[in-house]
Length: 229
Image (cartoon, rainbow, N blue to C red; front, top):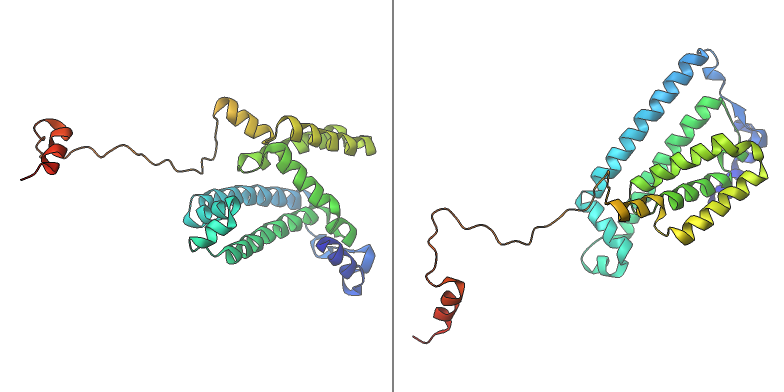
């Protein structure tokens, strides 16, 4: 809905070409190979930076707060977590990442139009990659993106049948592998490339080197405390 509102809005602005869009004429003077190399390296650097920042964020206190909000908003708010502010912050950061990806995509094409920039396919493909790869893990969308890229390279020329195949695959994986491909693999092998959960040891601390053992053990010490004087 929001994408459609923006599409209609930009389609009626003559300064950006209206419904037909506009070309990025300022970059035509740059050699094509140099432009493509720079775009590719920038995209790779952005992917690495985004994955690293997401991993560090999920390992921080704010990431723990976000996981608590995902599990139970009421319980998280009762513990002093700013639910609305945290959601707003995540939305802004995610929007910045999406804008960066869109800028790199259209930088390679040198042309942008409202129909292409605000197409519903962006949302559908993003949901497809997350569902296929697995929800709740960093590795899930990465696996889903690789699967989607492979399918797009091999079967995109089949047109409507290609889209039907993507939908059928999403339905089958949702029914058979409810946690996605990576979630299923993680359950069977325990593999985890980006561990975000911190393990807490519940073992009692080791006694100090100069401590003296209590005669009779812990039971005797307890009995001595409870015995009348």
